[in-house]
Image 1 (spheres, each protein chain N blue to C red):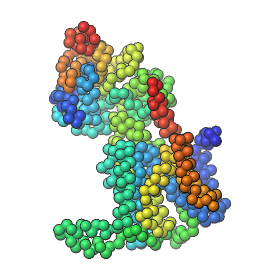
Image 2: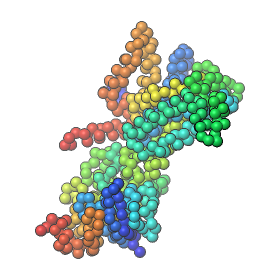
Image 3: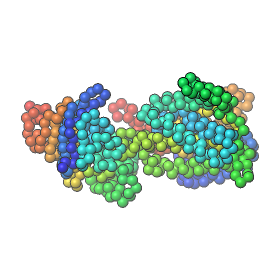
Image 4: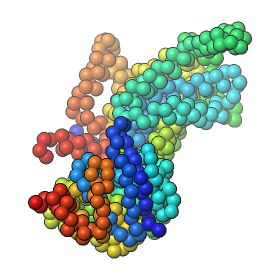
Length: 238
Length: 354
């Protein structure tokens, strides 16, 4: 059974039909990427999964249970956590305080929180160096690390990343993607939304290509990397 | 001046509060003037109101310009139950608080999704509705008699007096414990001092609690807060309920102190004063609210003393001082570290190209 299964998902922003019947699956332990141009519906898909947007039709099943009617704040208790687009870190809090907020759903379980913090610091030594710094004064790359680290503090089974490469220098993108691979190796399933299709497909095991609310192509990442249509539209080759 | 504030801030907080407590306890002995003790009592009432509004405005970041409504609910609860049913004042204080909290939950739930200025406007409306409803008393409900089957209400409601209309309620019982009745200004001084001390203690605990941290996150970024597993609706409702409960208790204390209350005591101007206390002193900062209360309540009284011959200038100087403050120190007199950072970051973002 798949960890996450989406069947025929329709979502609207007001009258705009943003998702027109999307179906996808994510197996436990996989890295799955969702690629596509601006406005294709990538972020909308993530927002639907995390309960921030109520889909009008279709079903989202996580770990055998339908979650399309679960309020957003309870989704994290089910084991799904996301590093949202634009990072959305708490900019006046310190790095450490941000991480603590990520563990909000764990309550007062100090031992687990401490263990998670150590795990995050091991993945991102930079965050440990800056743990008392105000998050808003971090560089873009560090803020992205913090957003991912904060999401990891809740010990998710499924980690959703929305455009982690946004606005970062190529070298930093490589570093972040390397860390994503490490997180995955620790047993966290990852759903990655990216515009940087090449980097995402190199990292992922499978991929879905979104276009104006439809999934137009899906398959093993290697195969998509070789696909002519994908090369033309998303990898900038002619 | 700047140095002075910096040094004051670096003082260990507990030391600061201990010194303040000693000064406060000695105050009526050193200054045995009834008038100044009365001013101090007003300071205490407004400090409680400011600290309660600080939960909603400072911690949760919800703009609220109708705080006088909760104050009024508390005061009228105490007044009505004490004059009609002779309930002892100390039993009334928790009831006033709870009723104000229930009232706050009822009115804030439908408007909770509003943000910033919009929420502000609606709360102004609620504040005014409460004041006008108190002035109109139950007779304003006579229109219900027009509904078929409810005609009997006409006579009943027409003769009923609950809030006393524009005249308000007189003869509210004074608090008493074991036969001791609070009468003198200095009796109330110590009563209020105890309440303010407890409020400060409670607020400090609240600030660092799980709920306090949740408020900080909601204020910073609601979406991210929700993604962390914070029930933002519940957390914001709690801010309103707790803030209102505290204002309700302050209202009950006020009613039992002055023994006469009227709707005009709870006008929009009162809400403005509370708002200014918080913003002027330092949003989200407990010492800030106390400093703000001195600025808004004690300073005008001091000016009254100094400007004995030019009374009419008093409010003008006061207004000028407020404008000056907002230009020179927009973060407030004694800001919380966090709020100052917020302003600094906002300023940096505003610089084009940065």
